[in-house]
Image (cartoon, rainbow, N blue to C red; front, side, top):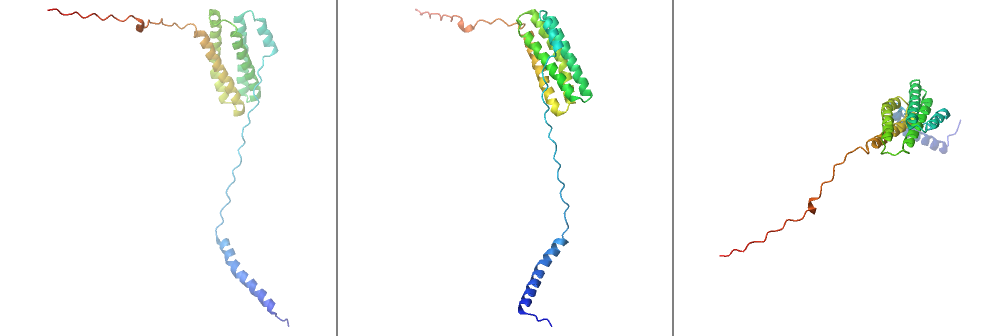
Length: 211
């Protein structure tokens, strides 16, 4: 027969005491309703800005512009036509969702308009011929503005930021053209003489009354 020692009795009592303490706690935790885990929000991708379009004038266009350097009207006409062609190509690429090709065309449009403004800045602004050239460029930029805006609104953000930059540049170029066209045609009124420079009226000497 196995002999029960006092040490065995003490260990059994300790185990029973631990069971009485922890069993109610475990039962209470199991009886509570389990809350469903909160759904983790998936990280949203941050759009990266595409590289800026490279401003360049292709060799064929530059050769044509240099050949018409002695004829300012023809040179400006060629520049506007080349720029319009690149803008049209950018619109077509945007419609096909080829945004990289559209961005490239916008860069070439930007380069041509910038070249036109630099070319016109070499002429005297108080000349009627110069004002006519600025007026022609202003009319072209006026038509290009809404087209750039419409194209930007249908372009992803990473490419649209650069179209917005060209759009702002075209708007500033139009303002410069308007200032050059109207800056010397404002008629100023002649300055009126300052009334403070008139001589003051002399005070009459009082008469002495004699009886």
